[in-house]
Amino acid sequence: MIKKKVPVKVTLKTTMEQDGQQETFAFEEDGEFIALNDKYYLRYLEHQNGQTTPVQFRLDDGEVHIHRQGATETWLVFDPSQPTITRYRTAYGIMQLQVVTSRLERDLDPAVPAGRLSLSYRLRGGGQEIGSYQIELHFTA
Image (cartoon, rainbow, N blue to C red):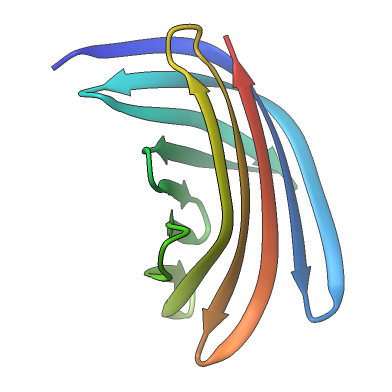
């Protein structure tokens, strides 16, 4: 097992559209890039509205995983070749969601480390469209 941790600066911009309303969140955080058994992870703590949420991206070749743990827990898998199913844990119980990824562009240089991720996806739940989302992520040592 080869494990390498490197401190990085993370810049993230998320645009969400739900019920005709659009919101954009942008922030910079300190994080760490982890290389473990030929898999690459990006971890950081997101500070928003007085809350701190641990976030982890797993940057695979064909797909990307995001795990967020806070008041709600989210585990999303983005695969442009097919929709994926995930569970979204809320205070009211667990919802099953479908993730439809329309764009996934990943640029990664593990040697630096530095990278860029551009994602567009839609969430569906209970047979209805919940919203559409764009994520622009950049990180560098």
